[in-house]
Amino acid sequence: LGSYECIVGDLEKAALLSLYDSTGGDNWKDNQNWKDASKPICSWAGVTCKGGSLDNATVTELNLNGNDLTGTMPSAIFELPFLEVLNVRDNDLYMEFGNIEKAEKLDTLYISAIDVGSIKGIGQAKALREIHLTGNALTGDFPEEIFDLADSLESLFIAYNKFSGTLSKRFGELKKLKDFYAYDNDFTGHIPSELAQLENLQNLVLAENKLSGTINEEFSSMPSLKLFSAYRRLKPGPKLHGKLPSFSNVPQLEGLYLDYNHLTGTIPKDFIAASLGSELITISHNLLTGPVPLSLDSFENLNIEMEGNKLSGLDSRFCDNRSWMNKAVALYDCDAILCPPHTYSIYGRQNSTESVCQKCDEDPDVETTPYWGSTDCDVPIDEQEILELLYSSCGGNDWYNKDNWLSSESICTWYGIDCGEGTTVQAIRLGANNLVGTPPEEIFALRQLHTLWLHSNPLEFKFKGIERSINLVDIRLDATGLSDVYGVGNAKALVKLDLKFNRITGPFPDELLNLETLEFLSLTDNRLTGTLPNKFEPLSNIISLRLGSNSFEGELPSFDTLTQLLHLDLSSECNGCVVSDQFSKFTMH
Image 1 (tube, rainbow, N blue to C red):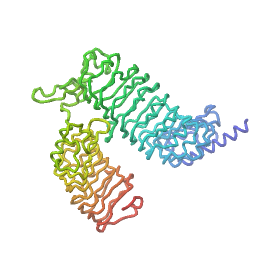
Image 2: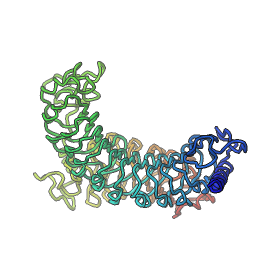
Image 3: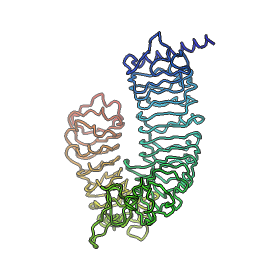
Image 4: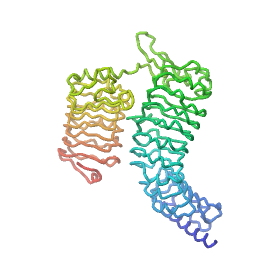
């Protein structure tokens, strides 16, 4: 036995020394006792052993987070036979997962905020129960290797990355999963219903992704769920829509965050019926209608944010719930829940002496907000009137296709109008349809509009008022005769902007550099001249930049800071432009 312990101790010491030498151990914040031959390895800073600090073998934990490790993590670290916890987060460290299959007892991995490149190989760590991969700048689809850990994985933290694509139906394989935190990635598509079938799932955080579609009613029956978060306060584009699920059979529910989506219909009568321990429910800034269901009055203590919808009623009996809204109802009565019609507050309710529900214009001839929980006095926008104005302003009678326009049919059935699965306009696609004239700026008041395609029409398009269109991410105005882009810089949510085959003249429009969210920009085949801007840093998210077939000249700027840039078109008529080796990494045209 003693001989075995010596062999194990020698192996562990060699692995630790390899780590020290490979990651600049002499410069660590804390390297106490490391490399001191008179001290057992279990007394080295950050090392925990099964037998305590006096032991000289059986390393179970390495906690070196934020310890100024630099360089590359040696694969030998996975040869520590008893290692259960590895914590090297928040270091300037590069790490791969080769050899991880030897870490047969590795239970918990804290590797947030380091460079892992990819997580290829991680699926070989068959005992992994908890993985922290937050803020690692990871991109691409959700890694399929995670599903190789189905027999052990309980907690997965991948927030603050750039994962994209859809969430796999294979999540249903992770039967032991309790925590899935994917906040602030770029996942798209539906929330897979397979997640609702995970009986052990307690915390599901999908907020600030780019998810759309409906929320399956299966999420209303989850025995262990405590937190469901899918709000969209920051990112524009298509959002979750359709009916609000009842969440009626989720007895452990403490927090539900669905604000700033496009949910429609009424609040279900059995909403959160079994969730008597709920702490905060946020369904504000959706498109919900009807009265607040009186069934919620059975809750003695509830914080529920419902402002910014189209709610038509709040029973006076709610005013007796003095513990509601963090006891604000005891101070401000029902105003603490929702401001009444024809009044407003910045929060849609009163939560302090500084957020009183104020009356709108008392002039009876001035129409004001008719709903409960308004954050301003504006009358709700009539989307049909805006579309009718577009029709009349752009020669609708002569459009090639005008099916259902100006008819009594729902505007969602009008040719070129897409409401998703809801009732509000989300996309206008009227390309090559013989629109003429100037589209009215009122189209930018369509609050849920995310796509505007008017390409291949002879238009005199203007960007005035585009700052109102807070969800607009995709514009196609190619081949419209566009001559300037004045005002487009106020479109703070734009991701795709296609302006090719137009008549834009002069130097590269500096206003385009205000579009910090832009990923795709096409200005090919215009009449642009002069030198390009020295710096394109503001377009830090740009993936495709197409500037060909113009008349630019002079030395080309450096694009090295555009780390996402994959496609760069500078073809033809770049008079005397100097191209350096820096462009070798791009797909050039």
